[in-house]
Every structure is written in C-alpha cells, then in structure tokens.
Length: 471
Ligand SMILES: Cc1cc2nc3c(=O)[nH]c(=O)nc-3n(C[C@H](O)[C@H](O)[C@H](O)COP(=O)(O)OP(=O)(O)OC[C@H]3O[C@@H](n4cnc5c(N)ncnc54)[C@H](O)[C@@H]3O)c2cc1C
Image (tube, rainbow, N blue to C red; front, side, top):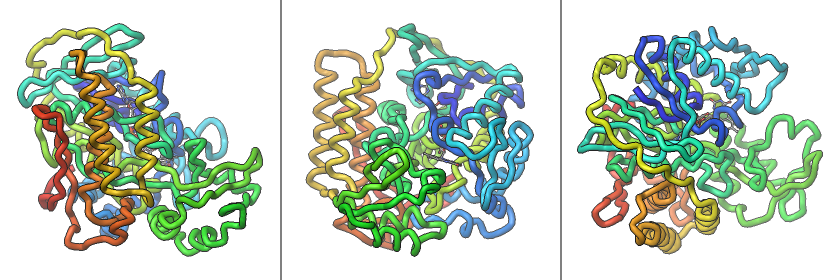
C-alpha cells in the first residue's frame, strides 16, 4: 500500500492500516513544504460533529453547495466517534468553546497545533512497522486501468514505489492562488488527470472572510486582542462590521463573502494590527473539490482522501476537515485491508529525477488567475486564461521533454478555470458576478473535469451526480 502525503489525512490512514498489519509506505515532501495540517491548523474538532451519529446529519453538515457526496454524512455517522476516541488516545483533546482542541505541551491555542497531532499519529504508524519516505512524487505509472506505482525524487535522486493500491492524501491546491493561505499547489491532481482521472467540483473554495492577502493568512483570535481597526478606503469599515455582526452563525464565511466582499473586493481595505497596517480581504483556505476516484473511477486501484479528494463540501467548514479525514481514513483502511495480500503487477524504471516546478510559472498562474477571479470574473478572460494554459503546455512539450510538475500544474489550473466556467450560477462558496444567485435546477449537479490526452484539451461537464455515489 502506498500513501502520498503526510498531513492529517495520510497519517491517519497510514496508522489505521499499520494497525491492521498492512505493509504500508507513506511518502511525503514534508521536509520541504509544510503541510496545511502542520502550518496553519489548530487541529480543532467541532463538538457538534459528534451529533451526526444521532441528530439529522443534514443539520450538522449544512451543504448549500449542493455538491456534497451523499456518502459523506453517513460515513461520518458511522465512523467519526470511534475514530476520535482513538485519536484522543494519542493526543488528548480538551474543550475550547464549541470545539475540542488538542492539549499540547505548550499551553494555549496556537496555529500549527495540528502539526503536533500529525507527528503523534506518524510516530505511532512507524512504531507499528510502517515506513515513511521523504520525497516528492513526480509521476504515476499507469498500465491500462491499473496504477503500478509512483516515481519520486529526493534531493535529485530518483526513486520508485511499487504498490497494489495507491492513495493520494496530497492536500489541496489553494497555493495556486494569490490569496491562498497554503503553499500546496496540488499539482498531483493534474498528474492524476493526465493519466485519465476525473476531477470533481474544483470551483468550490472555502474563504476566511477576514484575512491578510499579502501575508497569506487569516486573522487569528489573537489579532483581535488589541481591537484592531478595520478600514475601507481609509474610513472605518462600518458596512463590513455590520456584515460580520449580521452573519455570525455557521455560514459566516459564505455569507460575509457573498454579501459583502463580492461587492467590495475592488475597494482597498486595511486592518491596523499591533505590528503595522495590512491589506485586508478574504483569503482562500480550503479547496473543496478534487480527485473523483469513486464518483468516476478510471484507474481502479487509486484512491484519495483529505483535501485532494472530492466529497466534503459544506457551508460551515470550521472544525470539520480533521474529523472528516479521520472518518475517511478509517473507511478506506477497512476497504483496503481486504486487498492487502496482492503483489504489485509489474516493475518499472525509476526514470531520471524530474526538476521541481518553475517558480516563475507558479507566480504567473497566480497573477493571471487573480486578474479574473470573483467580482472581476468574465467568461472571455477565463477562456483566454484556459487557452494560455494550453499554449504553455505546448511550449513545454515542444522539445520532447517528458511531462513534469509544470505541465500538471497547467492541467490543474485549466481544469479549475473550465469548472468555474461550467457552473452557470453562484452557489455556496462559489461566486460568479454575472450569475449572482443559485439556480435550483442545478441542485446536486457536480462539475467533472476530464483531460483528453489525444488533443491536449480539458472538457468539463456539469451534470446530476448519481445518487448513491460513495465517498
Ligand atoms: C488557517 C487554517 C486553519 C485550519 N484549522 C482547522 C481546524 O482547526 N480544524 C480542522 O478540522 N481543519 C482546519 N483547517 C483545515 C485543515 O487544516 C486541512 O483541511 C487539512 O489539514 C488538510 O489535510 P490533508 O492531509 O488533506 O492535507 P495537507 O495537510 O496539506 O497534507 C498534504 C501532504 O501531502 C504532501 N505532498 C503534496 N504533494 C506531494 C508530492 N508531490 N509528493 C509527496 N508529498 C506531497 C505535502 O507535503 C503534505 O505533507 C484549517 C485550515 C487552515 C488553512
């Protein structure tokens, strides 16, 4: 069994597999790129998530996005409580308002608290005989509809992992955006698409309504200690304050974005904090779509969990991702343990070490995407960007060099953009100024992006999700 990614999603699955004595290798770039689970997360768990075993799950997992996998709430009801109890044995959790918070060696709530949780889980995984490799996965090796394994590199040295089952837990792609809080660009979603995989609901993003776009972070509770002034064009941002007061419930992030920021994004806002005055605005924190390994399986032994997977889309996201990835890890571990006796179907060459992405390409993608997002969105500029992505792929392939991270990033960026073009409405976390309200005839419709290798094109459909699709 091979798992790509050592955030909370990959770590929890690895731990549960190792307990079942399934030989498991986890590979992660952790030493280079801090995972979202480590860098930012408090590791909080919303207390109300425990209600999902008894109360109607729809109340706990409100989903105005209408794109949530129907298997998601039942999965939470079945597995979450037991998984949390198990996690609580490794890292003790204590109450913190309506949330539970890991009790760590250092007192108080601090960003990055999720990292201590991941470390504790990975330490148990290794103690149970699991193997962790540091490395950057550069490609999949697929034969027909079977994945034989992955290629990776570590400090320029190529390597390969053969496996019978592969699980992506490689995180989200908010690093693709200028206002994203993470550095992970999720290019492996592009790799998966290049090998025939489908990507669902890429257009959906959670946003923290109060953030510092230049510092790529949300405002933290400690920022409010000095009662900071929020300014709109140099004046007190009274309307924003009113919006924050009016929308304090579960859907605060969605409502403040939809009711305030979509009309005010082009007006300069600042916040005065103890260490200076900073640009204020919403920041992207959670990509809600991803690999549709179950919804539209194309490579039969590839699975996905965590932020890189399609499935979880909810209007109120706080304190839910960690719980969701615990439940998903358990569900996958049960299913995968049944396949643990197979042997890898064939060997392959590690190949040469692929260079990492061209940093200037990432910058340019961020810059170009920023130019037509949200209130500036137009179909014409989205189409222009999508064409630019394709032409850049052509340029990179012209000299015959094998596809690499750059090409996969360009596939993902185009797939994201074509997904935003395909959803002809605004819904949940997704907003199009030309179509500001939801079209209820599109309830339960999902976008599915498909890369056609023969003509290097990405096609996106918006169609009713099959009922009964499972997470
Ligand atoms: C500011 C902030 C606060 C949050 N607070 C909470 C909270 O309190 N509670 C909660 O439940 N959720 C919270 N979240 C959300 C939650 O932290 C994330 O959704 C979750 O950590 C994602 O976990 P993951 O394992 O899917 O991905 P990640 O944590 O991003 O891990 C992905 C891993 O994959 C590795 N990887 C990527 N590409 C490759 C590659 N090519 N080769 C090898 N490895 C690769 C990365 O290095 C990384 O280790 C918060 C998010 C933010 C931004």
